[in-house]
Image (cartoon, rainbow, N blue to C red; front, side, top):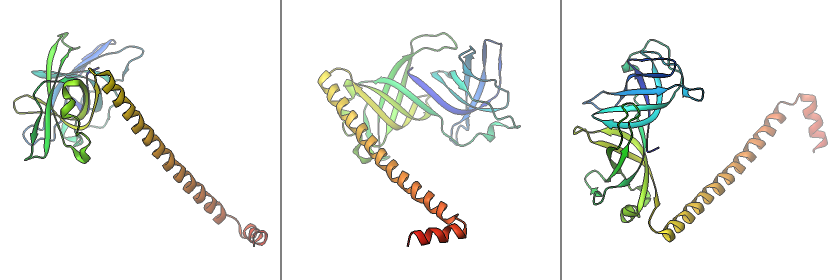
Length: 250
């Protein structure tokens, strides 16, 4: 899987049979110029399928493989039960659509934009359109990110050696270029085994530190909940029991 899309969508049209369901849907863009964007979806229904029954003019959370080629196509994995009240596209929540994208970087595409406090680079991947059957659709994705707390200091120097996984807000620009406003970037080294081993050790240590931290926090809250529970039990004792407890425990 190389391109996973997640968004609340308004189902405009729906057709299909017992084996598949397809149609058009729109999702909100949070843009003044373009309020909604339309996508074409198609999903196959099997015994193991996560696709549930859809209704026209309903809102559903759609998760699926995303491809952009003049228009947006989505091969869904899941349609949770739709909202059944009478609604319109304007009832869609102001939530950004998310995209998870796995790809390699295009050389010499890293730029810094000091005016906006962001950095960017471009990823490229050939995708398959499960709706039209077209293969090797070249998809270029511009990734914009901020380097808060210096967490991506080493990213620029290692872009040629890495495969990246980026998750963030999906935007389509006025020139029909695809953008991800990244909330998280992960990468693995593919050319230098020693560097890759060192990175994996560093990640394992970081994960171990997180686990130790979570365990210590859980221990504190466990003690807090236990103390609160004892206080509630003590306060709920009847007066006679309370006086006896006080006598036995001067």
